[in-house]
Image (cartoon, rainbow, N blue to C red):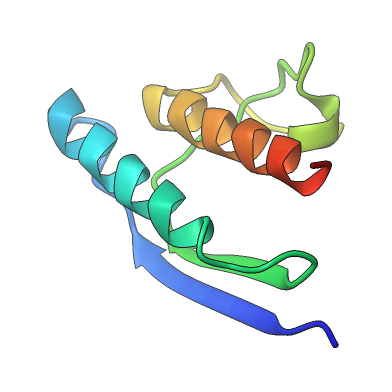
Length: 90
């Protein structure tokens, strides 16, 4: 039986110091690792992310559509998503 897990969170703004953002994403990643496979995860909130329209090598993570340019938070978020999608295949 699959479960649905919903996370509601708010990430530091893009202008925050890198250590604060890294601490947030480290905690989020550790938290996501507690979800058992093959449960469904929905991540909601204000992540202050711009994914951008450059999806080269990230199409399976970001999809085909995006706006503007990716910001630093977008880099961190897509990195988290890549690592999580890798965990799904194991």
